[in-house]
Length: 280
Image 1 (cartoon, rainbow, N blue to C red):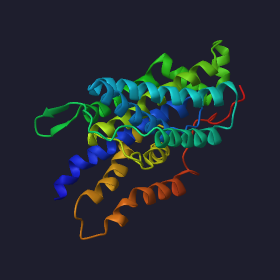
Image 2 (cartoon, rainbow, N blue to C red; image 1 turned 180 degrees about the horizontal axis):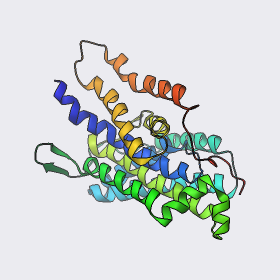
Image 3 (cartoon, rainbow, N blue to C red; image 1 turned 45 degrees about the vertical axis):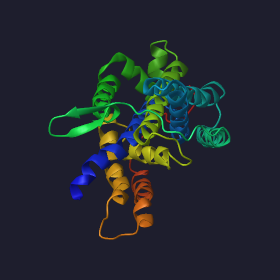
Image 4 (cartoon, rainbow, N blue to C red; image 1 turned 135 degrees about the vertical axis):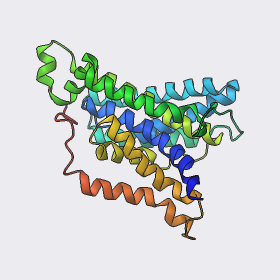
């Protein structure tokens, strides 16, 4: 029974992990992204629409990522181009995504899921589960060991450095937010691919949990996605009969954990120096 927690923890960790990568890219560029919840929701919505219309999980994934990027671009235009308040904009986009998906209810028919890959000793998992640790390492290398990553971080840390190189801060912030749309959109796609249908409340606050994991991981890909294992483990507890604890209590554990992490670490973590500051 306890061993059942391993695959379920990996499944629960995956969508949050992709959203964490998206949040890190956005916030490393200096843009607070509370819209992760809405981006994931639109990604899930796009997946079920695309997969149902075409019968292909790959088309569903493409449409989901596309809608995730579009909703992220709304956040980017509002905050970067028009200097709107980033937290308010993020909340507004979450409400917009919720309204769209509830008004334009997608099909409730079963849709195709992305293929599983079987590996020795660890079993068979969705390709997105196995791809997450690879992308975590690639993101870490990109952010900390490439010129492009240095420029992305400079957009959120030291705008003077970008000015010295005659580079546009807005450009790199757009790059960060667009990448957040891609990754958070994939996280939403995974949820539908895993259960094969779209339901109201399918995201279930995972975007907000991802924000807590970003802070818990100190805005670093390796630490952030590793922190997701803690939230994924907490989320998987309601899938097993654990000491006859009521399911309702088990389901709120990830959200309680989120509040505990935020209450204990917000004042101690060191965010990018220019996070949320639009003055160039």
